[in-house]
Length: 157
Image (cartoon, rainbow, N blue to C red; front, side, top):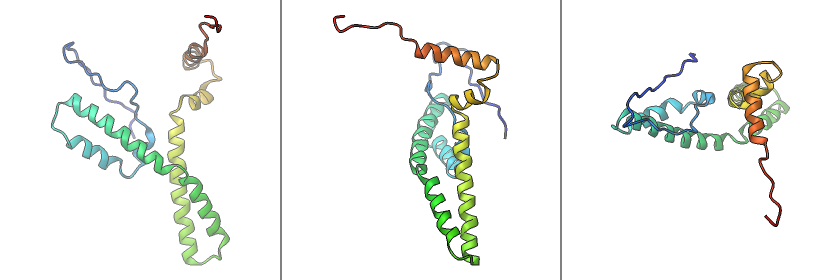
């Protein structure tokens, strides 16, 4: 897989690309079976300009990801309970097949969860935070800015 990201550069001031400032591509999306279908459907659903297509794709992916995430909540626990039940049963060929299928599905869900958390800043902080790096200093400065109390106000004003 490539880690390269495309850049959309507009040199004209009259029709600047605005997009969503909070949109971030999530690595776990590509692990989902319906991702490619969702991107194609969103992209082909309109014949507008490139900027409008990208904005539409962003909105569609956000909605799609929210729905997928809701469906995944508790799936890992459900698979683990199912695996425990299967391991407690008598070992037949059918049971062994179900155990293997459940382990594969559970492994995929764990991989998706790890990909999700690797993109979170706190997870990166835990990995690279103890090193004396530019990333650490930038992250620490940002956290300090967020956690700073600029003023206190009494009840009387």
